[in-house]
Image (cartoon, rainbow, N blue to C red):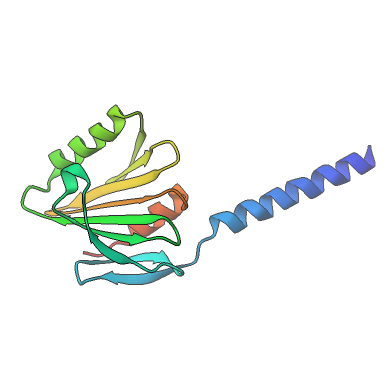
Length: 145
């Protein structure tokens, strides 16, 4: 019985350590062409591409392959709550789970973590299959337009 308890305690401690290690992503400040700044994973290297994402097709997409991380930035007079709601609804209609935290829409799209939010005429959509929602939330909360 003592041996089993020792093994269980070891496995629990190991699981806790591994859980903390995988969740802990070191972040650093990054400027996105003067549009906005945000904390991003320290190992991130972004490549600017044109967005081809339907509603957000007139935006810039920054992609980091190391973290399978994409950030879509749109600045347009048409950016408003209605556009965000329409985008979120489209994701919901495709089966995504959506929760709200302050002005952030947190979206679990079956393995793809997405955060979408806007301020005035600027919209950001952050998504990754590698980074957890807590990391993406910390990143989104650090945005300075």
